[in-house]
Image (cartoon, rainbow, N blue to C red; front, side, top):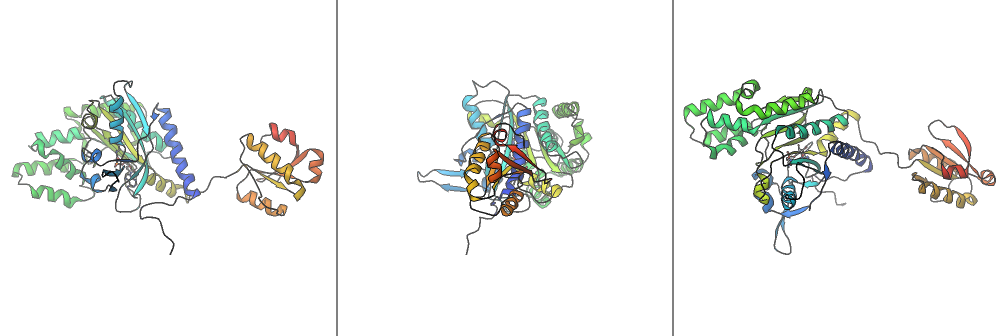
Length: 421
Ligand code: HAM
């Protein structure tokens, strides 16, 4: 029996890798347009890094083991705690606001389903050292520009935007919830859509006074009517963030939606997720403001905002729109020979073209010219360069454009120096 890959892990064939490369290219291109610098961290981390502040959900999903030095180790399930530690180490030297991005592979022992695997790559873009709402707008705009770069518009992808401070204010002041209960209440609201029973159970487990329970029910009902919550004083940063996005011309992508809370425990302000407009898949991206994490992880008090965007859901969306992935052409030019005695000239030409930076392949064994041209077409080469005895004698080769079938004789010196295929 062949040994198959573990559940939730991918064997990535070249066609699928071509699609992943396209996603990575969009990530890198937008990160660079927004002035972000790339960093990386270790794929293994002490478990403690996540138990401190990520929240129970992600800790329960850790790939966790004890190493030979008896350390409690996890494969990284997210990048944000690593980022917090790294920034804290150099906080004094780094010019604020810090704009950093990374594309780590992450591991979570989740129940495998469409758009959810046990490993994924995740673009992280974070701004550190700026508490103002324009930093929130900036990272949301970057996330939107990535989906735009991949050809999606507001009819395809929606930003669902909220602010935990607004819900917290309503929970404490309208419902009368003790602040010690806030985290639990936010987590229950986070589960409303996916698992409403959990939210009901959370309320049932507490002996909440009747008036508070009514106020809580009214608050939950009002989540669908953002205007009321948006009118509160505490909503001013969210309003400014919205104004920023509007001024950038991106308001058409954004819905204020107070059902978005986010599962991770460390968020303190604006939170957002990007979804496919049909909501058929899990979130494309999630992020928000986490102003206390650096203090908790590294002892440095710096506000942060950022997001993580995975490759899996984006890949599903591209698949729905474009069909199955296709490999990129592996070569531009295929050098073919008429007879065995042409081989040395062909090898010399192939190598000279490679030195020019052109992708070149040739048959590795003796083959009829027809077979060689067949392989050239299968590789998606733009041109075949054919060398035979007559051409060699004249210091030339035949360039056959494989798209049109047109042929022309070209001097070998020109091919080697500056011929454009
Ligand atoms: P997250 O919501 O856990 O946030 O993940 C962000 C995105 O990563 C998700 O929206 C999804 O696209 C992708 N993702 C997460 N888990 C999986 C999975 N099992 N399979 C496929 N894709 C997945 C965070 O991780 C935060 N640390 C993001 C952040 C950065 N917040 C601030 N800065």
